[in-house]
Image (cartoon, rainbow over all chains, first blue to last red; front, side, top):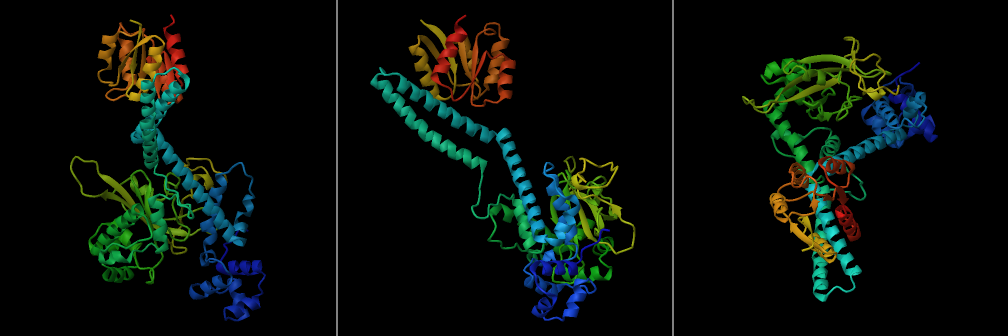
Length: 422
Length: 122
């Protein structure tokens, strides 16, 4: 029978892996052995400082001890396996791998993410090589110059009776062409714009680097509350530009929904987005973004958000628990985010759950709306926004959404794009 | 006057090297480096063979080839295309437009001389 692995079980598993006795561990964190026993058997929920202390003593990332980690890692782990169908894996042991060796499981998923990132980078560069006119011109320059050098050098080498005027002329041609070749080669490399950082080995796009930076900040930009830009000296210009774009928009949202009155109202209406939109007379998508952009140190319910453009490409997201969408092309179209795109202006609310063991049910609120000023005669940009938060248990039967077709077990789904490995 | 070749190429030192090579082999080499006015030069020089670069300023070699094959006076003149792009689709395009031969850069002088002699042998 499948079961959900809770924090206590993880603590126990990790302790056993390290060969530490229950008595020793309890002593190291200043609790009684009997209390630790209750924790390990999930009869006492733990979190906060005690969980952090246990993580430190057990030498493990605290995120890997928290509830729900299995579900968050299992999906990406299955996707990593799907990328190598020729490798025979023990599918039934995947959960056991995550439970017993969460660090190794996370390493596999991190490497899979890196491979996907590099493949995407390769595709982008191939496309550029094939279609970029500047690169094509630069390549033509390089090859034409090399051709001229080769032809001229052959004449010099193969014509022993070449008179001195021609020799001099051809030597001069080789000299100038060699210099041109050096310059055009440098220009070509510049167009390819391959910056491989030694050490970090990062080939992240600015969006990916910006998301990583946001994750490090808890997906919250405090400067937005005062409509100022964050100072981020440790990222490159392109990444900073992306983050500052997000900060500007968060600042505009904060201007319309100032923190103190907004949080007071939100608590008063149990964080109901529609009521908040009516209360403050702002569009629903502004409220959805604002609810996902509240100070993490304040006691608000955990909420994530995802935004996509009209092509369905995720342009921004803040994950929560085991909710995270693939950036492009691989997310399940059953998510309310994409359903909202089919009818801009229509507010969508659904409770959904991914198939599998004890997945989190999420209450989702989504809407697609125009972006920017409305202009007669011009094509209007549309973007969809979806707020995601854990649903109240037992409130309603959740609809099913998939983790992505390759690792989705939903049968007879009209929206399936690929066969599943499961 | 020897047999005439028209070289349509915008790289000056390629022009100089190929001109020298073919001149020593007894050819009268006419050269032109602008795609826009290439057809006028064809009409003026009435060559027995045209060596035509694909990437030219003004008009591409493919467009010029299309015009050459569309004009009765040049429909059957052998045309050797030169290109830095050696992919199959480029070769297929050149052949579909009527190129007699397709040569990728960088090429050897021996290859050029051989091809010019072969294409004009008949």
